[in-house]
Image (cartoon, rainbow, N blue to C red):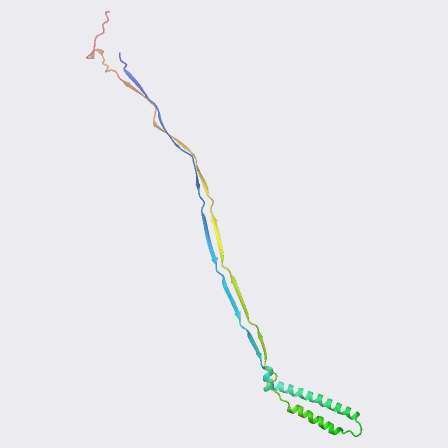
Length: 202
């Protein structure tokens, strides 16, 4: 007699997906800024300066009233000094004179010679001449090189770690399949067209 029931088991089906761990490194970036400051060449020159003072020279030609009075006073004072010296010298000569010496003739000769020396001499105008002074010239040269500034901006690199992963997926759940493989059942059994009565006499 054949079995009437066929039992089949379906095993569980699991899919496993793994992701490996990884370590990623991001490189750092670098930025550079360059700035230039220009200086260059600087030259400063000052030429010679001539100073001419003609105040005294102009006063010798056309003196001012104050200078004219001052010169007159100086000449009068000088004449008084000279007359005093002359009278003192003449008095000394008169004290030391000898008999028979002609003092008047000697005094007249000295006075005449004095007038000749005073009135005959040449004089040049203006007297004094202009006063000339000068400031020396000056030259300053200054040179400065350009200034170059470099600014670095560095960003450090970074590490990024991705951990591993395991993923389980159930593709098929476990199951039990029960299948009836026998023929049809007739109630009563005599209704089966292939029914054969059971011989119970033996």
